[in-house]
Image (cartoon, rainbow over the protein chains, first blue to last red):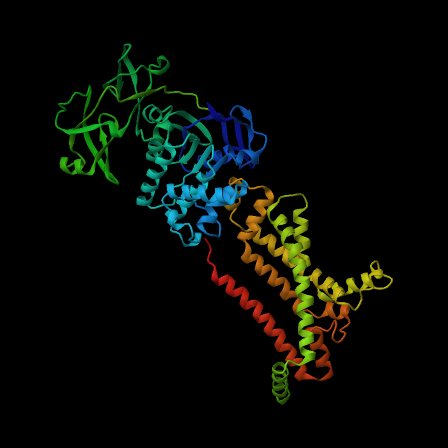
Length: 360
Length: 232
């Protein structure tokens, strides 16, 4: 059942459309992630979906157009990147949404106790909000939101301002809470890992438009266009041309190298784009002895450490990017000029049409 | 120099023995200025919240008029109030000239723009995301205004104190509307004016000390409240 549906939603600033969405829907019990780079319009879209920003278009609640913004806002809850707690105790802050809805004192106390407990901050109930750490304050902010038992929970980068350990702990707690809820959730993030771990569906927002709206694993495995591919971490988007094609296998040429792909070129395009995730490429010293159908003799151009992994830029007859762990890179002694074999299975690549029309 | 020393000594002696004339002027001052400030807060804070938060046609004009009102010369306000309540004036039927009510009206006109203007500035300067968060919590406009005003309680306290400060120390409007009647409309500032004109510097000093003590106490309370809290 569709809970919330936006149609022809547009937000304008200074006469310019900053967000324009043809259609976006949220199902019951579903977590929809609005994923996109900074400044893409994710927060603006979330505010428009939450009826907190003037926007053109139609918002429908269970199929009916929303006519009263206030009545709608009392069905939902929003958590922002900053906790935005008021100058009062944790208990009073967490009760606020319920108090504004006219819920009685005893019921408020019961629901807030549950919500604070679920977020692991029940022991802070009597503490003043200004004496909380950033992580504690954000937990209280989420407790305040879930205390009203919203039918849709909007989360605008709720872990953005937190340190890594706090962020990981809170993400795990939130994932557990979301799994136990029948309501829908809209989560704004630019973090791909967060999108994958929390989202059922992902809508990729780039320059104010929804460029892809699909199951989370589909978006990451089969991005809809090169910009989406780049944002979801598909660093290798290579122009190819079809040499031969059967029902389940396509043979392509990329800069003269033959590559086999277990996919059909979209729309019968003879010149598709070949997408390969760097994480799906295996590097070996010497000749590859594995089962991968594509094994490309390559030369290491340079190695760039990115956290616990190393980004290896290769010359495989064309530029190719692979990711290996720091340990693997050290054990293999990867260094510029080194000869390696870059392998990937035929099922790994995804094909894109080269000239895909983009939504306006 | 002797004059000042004698004046100070006499002032301390009058304050110590709670001189009836000095105490009467002090209590009249607190009553008149306190009432005028209270009325200004009751009317100025809600209107300031509306002007600070709402966007409506003519808002800029309201803010300009308010800012102008914050700089009203007290004697001009006194003149307008006197003309209004003069026997032949539009409010002559009230027979309010030389009464505390007339003084309160004049002081209200002086304090009200200060309270309204500073309230509007305080609300306007609040984090816009806090407004969004409160709306997202399901607040009506009235509830949102109340919650935001509570969040801005420190600037609102400053606004009230600024309003009180503006009227407790003014003399022009009070002497014109209240006529400086002993044990009735004589307040600290008008009494200081009278006593210094008479050359009774010890009395004028005593009254000045009390006035300064009141102003100091107000600032001390405001400063204490400001320092007690740090932003979230």
